[in-house]
Image 1 (spheres, rainbow, N blue to C red):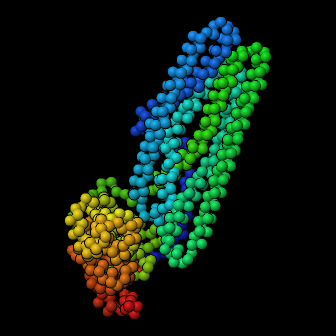
Image 2 (image 1 turned 90 degrees about the vertical axis):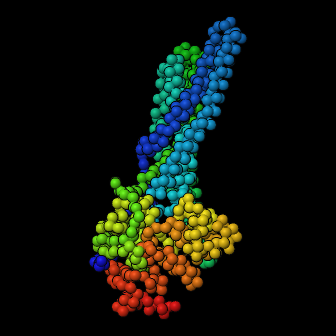
Image 3 (image 1 turned 60 degrees about the vertical axis):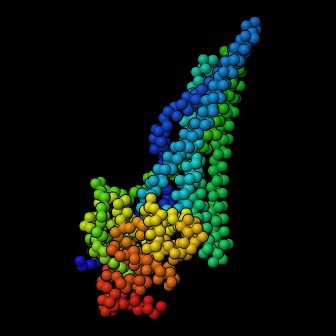
Length: 606
């Protein structure tokens, strides 16, 4: 089939796209609405926890009544203040205290475990969602920010999930109980006290908004700090090679001091918040002293009632202080939930269509049909109206200058990105009509930048087909020319390769990645500059393994080193104007065009 590409790469002006530096903000009501469903699997535990929370309030509500009865009996009729009455009241309080202790233990143990389980569920959902996000998301989001969101930010959710229902439930019971009892003692005085609460709450809510914004900035800066540390540590060889330790230290110190400034501002708001609540505490006590004293002088409240009144007000103020202390934890939890939702609300751009089919025994014919593509973040067009067919079992190569779209074409086949227009087909079926799992299961990719996971050689090869036997792994390694060097390692296939395979050479890592693809046994192979970073000896060994891998499979190779693609069935020369030349090695040399110039330059550099 003829190949055409009729448009040059160009740029369209487009409005700014959020690339991860800006973060969506959520209202508290929406955060709670999205968070509450996580309680559903633990409904029984939550209800039991709230029941225990109610039990813990009994002592605080009953003690002032006990003291009121003792005081009034002793003052009004001392003869009735018998040891039997005292023991009965003491026994009642003792039993209630035992119940409170048992309830507190349940809350501290099972309640906290419930919070930890919710945190675990949220982390599971966040990780699952991250696995579904496209390359575009990771291109625009720092890994340090992602790590902070699914680790540190969710730590606070455990305490929030446990304490948030408890604290507000306890506060509600105590406030209601105190109002009923205090109102029965002296309603005017009670109204004076409780009228201060809405004013105090309004002030607290306003200050909380400042605090919430500060916590949000603090979390973001932690992510930036993590990203800075990750970047400098992963690039520590480059840092040392250029003797730029001082520069990296200065960058880190700048971010570190910025974090300190944000944290200091957070503590300032916390100080204002706590001071304002203490002012209202004092006003409540002042109202009790002034108004209570006046009512006492006028005989509208008995001395015993005033003692009980003071104790209930103390309980009420202690409850308010507890809510105030919880406010910081509340804001931390809400910020953690907000940053969690920022992950969960990131668009999944690549997904299975309704009715997507399983790819079964593919022949390996690949076609680009009137295909156009542009990156969604900057809307730069890579190519337009591209038509190209690769036949089953054919070995095809793409060459051309950097930025011409070679790797992009390779990424479109396994749907790392989706076309803007047109379609890519395998065996005549649009790749979007296959399930992602079956599509990618039948495509093997060997890249220039090999990624090995922290683990053993065996772990990294068996990743190509989890569950494969050791014999199958060794057979794949032999086909990749890796078995011999693996057996010379200290522990053979059980040798630890280090983080990202740092204990192995480039050629060794590449052959392990090829063995991984051999074990996968896909119908389609994509080789994206798989040998360009290797020395001549390693390149020769890897090239032999790649030639073995390509036998009987449809193979698409992206290469800068033209010596590695001389035996390709067809070579496509891709530029910003599209596919400008097509043919095998000899045919392209005879055309004396772009490929010929590339080849001549490569020969002069050898």
